[in-house]
Image (cartoon, rainbow, N blue to C red; front, side):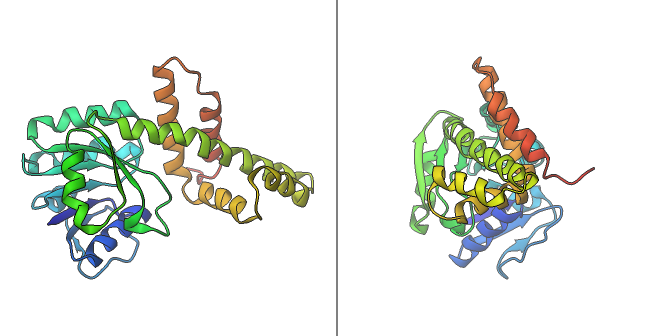
Length: 255
C-alpha cells in the first residue's frame, strides 16, 4: 500500500513518520517542510507528484488550503484511489471538495481528527464518514489504527468534530482570558485556583489549554471560523465561537 501525505506540519509529519514505521510506502509534500521525517518517507516535488502513484491520499493542511490542494491533485486521481480530507473545515467545504473530486471516480472520505495528535501520532482517534469511509477503514485495519466509522453521508464526521470544538475551544478561550486577566490584576494564583475548581486536578490541564491555543492559533482560529459558518447556516448565532476565534487571533504574529 502506498499513502501520500499532503501537508507536513505537526500532524502530517507525525502521520507520515508513523505510517513509514509501520512499513507503508509514504510519499509526501509540503511547501515548507520543517519537521524531521523518517528516512523512508519520500519527499515529492508537489502535491500532485506525491499523490500520483498513491492508493490513499491524506490531505492534512489548513482549512484555507483544503480546496486548492484538492484542485491540484484532481488530474492524478482515479477510481482506484481514496482521498481522505482531514482538514478541520466546514461541512459545506467538505461537500464542495467531494463534489469537485467526484468526476475522477476517487472515493471521498471526510476524516475528523478527534484528539491532539501528539503524543499518539498515527494512533490518534480518526472518525470517518462519506462514500469511501468503509473502504478506507478496511484498507487500514491491518495497521491497527484507531478509526471509527460514522456513516456514509459526506460531512457527518466533520459536523461532529466542529460541534465538539464549540466546547473545547470555548473552554480554552475562557481559560486564556481568565489567566490574562488574573495576571493584569496581580492575582495569578487566585484565578488559577478558580480554574482548578472547575476543571479539577492541578495546573497541567490549564497549561495544556494555554499552550495549545498559542502554538496552534492559526489552525484553531480557522476551525472556529468553520464552526461559526456551520452554525449560521442552521440559524444559530455563533456568539461564543466567534469570540473563541477572536481570542485565538491574539496569538497570531502581526502581519
